[in-house]
Length: 321
Ligand code: XMP
Figure 1 (tube, rainbow, N blue to C red):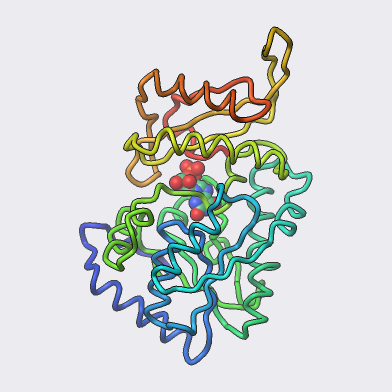
Figure 2 (tube, rainbow, N blue to C red; figure 1 turned 90 degrees about the vertical axis):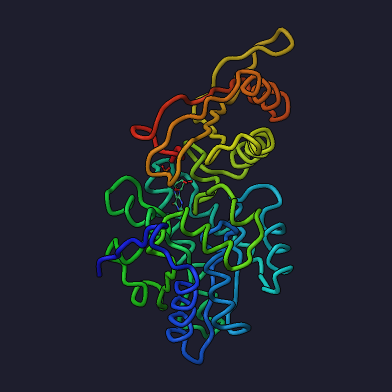
């Protein structure tokens, strides 16, 4: 079935919320629905729509895949607890790292995350709860980029010919699949989500895996997580669409305390964009870039080089993997 975009200027927010709430209620029937919350604006909107439609018949899970930013599972849990939506954090770190072991190819890494997420983790959660469906926040851009062959977004299934009922044993409901990010933010605000959610910069489904070039191991994720924290602190007021740190696979020769230090390279990217389809590098002041380099090379162990990408999308993409 062709998916038709609802552009922001044609979105009737109240009607959209009513229609989608009704749709979720009808499709879940009298049963339970399971919901995948990552804390991004897309899954947050779906969580609120599901909560409005089903109340306690919605079981919301935050999957701690080991690839999240510092403090993210607990922070997201708290925000939703304040909104009266219970969230259960599921520790699936071991499963994700086992699936990623030895993989370096970007699409294989994405594929491993997809399989672990839907088959191993949600397959069990849906089955154990007796639910028949999973709610998730796929948006219009995710579909478009996957169908165009740019990269496989981890949450795209039907458009890649995957029959979720057959493959995983449950139906997937995607209430915001016709919206791009700016329209999702409008709905988020109307649903009463706080600014830290409706204005939250995008963060990819495969999480920090999208920012580790080469093998994704706990120590390598630890490095990119520490650099990400610094980048997010320093660029929070930049007004940019998205900002991130990437860990490179190659090491380079550096010098520390007068001695050779063969260490890691972190690349910083900061994007001006409206919908992530195209983007250009933010013209950050040089002092900001210098501070980023100074902090990352002193606070993240083993990093000897920090670079800033000045490439547009296309030909770059926003993330590195
Ligand atoms: P790219 O890197 O393709 O990213 O230029 C475009 C936007 O999508 C985010 N992104 C993802 N989001 N699942 C998602 O939900 C994914 O697999 C994924 N990969 C990239 C990225 O952060 C950017 O905002």
